[in-house]
View 1 (cartoon, rainbow, N blue to C red):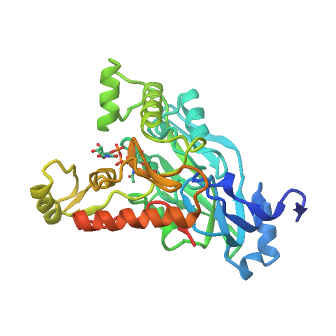
View 2 (view 1 turned 60 degrees about the vertical axis):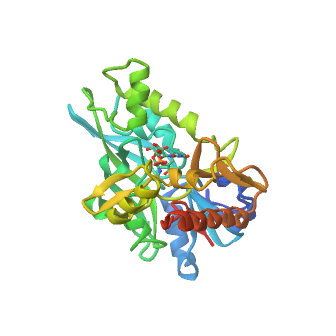
View 3 (view 1 turned 120 degrees about the vertical axis):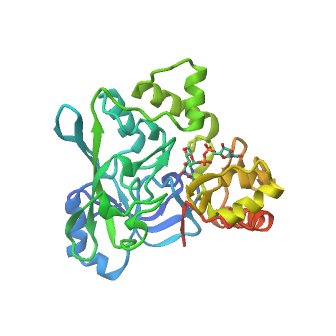
Length: 347
Ligand code: EPU
């Protein structure tokens, strides 16, 4: 380990197994841990970003490392949660990119700030959250985020974009498009509610869970507990079985295709996105194509949620990717629907 300035640490030939939740044993030629924005400014001054585009690593929960990484890997470990301002209805909260997302949700619920309780137990860090506009159980980050602050690799300056400027979409944002590879998210600002909160319990599995528990007027803590329980029952714990959550996006198809599919598959679920488009749960398509719970070598799909690809231990990135391709092909052949990865595939 070498020091590049007072705190930044460089590790050469770094093992990334513990830094990606799929548990792929890839290596990085050079890994630098970033604990302050000043370190980024220093690296910019040193000309690092002119020479190469670094690979930015947050919680490693939404990536598939296909092979070793020859670019410099920057592990973002900026931490801190600050309440910037409060009035009777809202609190504006600034959170640094390296904070663990679920710890932030716990902090919010403990402090009686509402808005992100439905997003409990999503793995990863705060900095990764706006990139794919994380969402679960009827809430998306875009519903509560005020702004995103990032470090511009070209200018070496910090910049802030408002919610609208981030162009959030379903698992999408400007950071996956125009700004891809050009910036490092350093923090986000959330607008959280103060009591009385308006909770969102409309997502089917969530409302069913609350009904079964006979909770008729849920508070944010009830929603939090319910989401944690549902996720724990459906999704594998990455500390036990390597996974990156949903591997594919839920495909959005033309209504005409959806209607045609209902002839052959009368039970196919679909959610209206617009007059002409329908979203189909990829988990259903994968299950119906026969892949749920199936193990091939060291990889497979999870027994309780077919959308989650898992590493049972010792899988290479290529092995997992080949499994994803097999599933993609099979779903395409069975339904004529193309699945696209939700996880970032790192070449
Ligand atoms: N389904 C199956 N078989 C399966 C899995 C799902 O038939 O093996 C069908 C069922 O009909 C079920 C429907 O799919 O009713 C929806 O399933 P679920 O509620 O588990 O949600 P999802 O659409 O599979 C999405 C997100 C998840 C998020 C959940 C809950 C995407 C790609 N995934 O999954 O997000 O937790 O909704 O809101 O949008 C993630 O992005 O990593 C992630 C886990």
